[in-house]
Amino acid sequence: DPVRLKVARGLLPSLIEVEVARSADQGSPGFTISRNGSSAEDLVVLYKVALINSGGDIMHESIGATTISAGESTKELPLGDIDATRAGDIAAIRFTVVPDGNDYVAGSTSTASITDEAGSIARGGRGWNLCARATEARMYGMNGRLLKTVRLRRVTSGFDEIAQEVRSRQHGRLGSGVYLIDVRTEDSAIRRKVAVGR
Image (cartoon, rainbow, N blue to C red; front, top):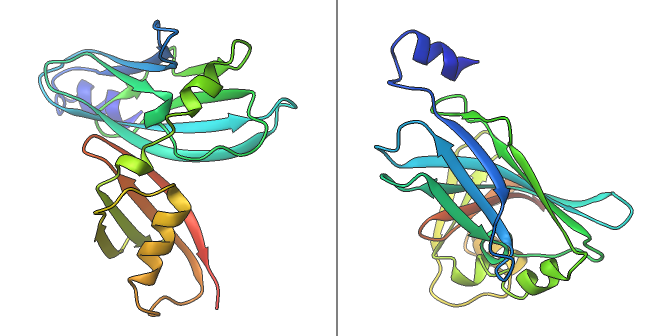
């Protein structure tokens, strides 16, 4: 593991492990991300969210990022801050910490799930609003090159609307292919692939 190697060689002051658990507050369904180790600096944590139907099939997956602020050891992520869309029959949400290979490793509890046996997804789903709070969207090529940054000045209904706005501001300069779009608030982000056809 590159992070453990950096610690062993003195390139990092200490090992930071990141774990996730279902939030203790059942009135506000979500996840609690925690770090073990130094909290002297901000830590950007990558994560993957899978929406799973009643048959156990993954209906949708997205990659996101959030920041545990300096001096803090935990970060609460309500369902409304994790993703902006729902796809049909969602029976469970699985949240997985993704190691970044630079600053932290995933701890022994790197995956947590919320199931809908008590309607918790439906309650949290009413606030699936990261896109409604988004302040910026960025479009990248699959090679990682930034193509466009769009400041969002109005409330949007979801990721698809934002993606359409970003594409339209390219004024027809996009060729057919697959692109990446980041949607960002002040402290969170989601990234998805979008296909553009001619």
